[in-house]
Image (tube, rainbow, N blue to C red; front, side):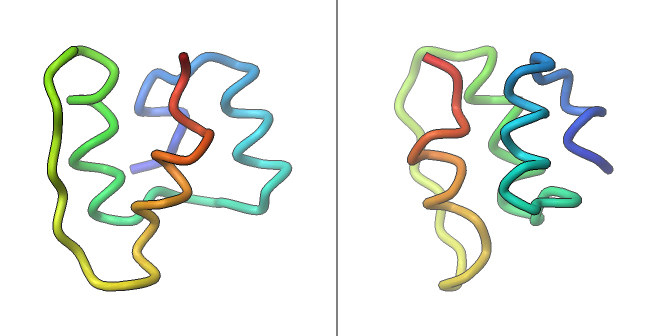
Length: 62
């Protein structure tokens, strides 16, 4: 799966590419669709270095 397949907006995809991300980590692959469609809180558990902070700290659209 690619970030493009997650149906992110073009400006978000550009930012992801600028940061050097190529494809989502498994935790991103599973949580990004939920975060884009839901307003509920989400708790995701994954090892350090798997992309949790990158997504929640700025890639997620407002």
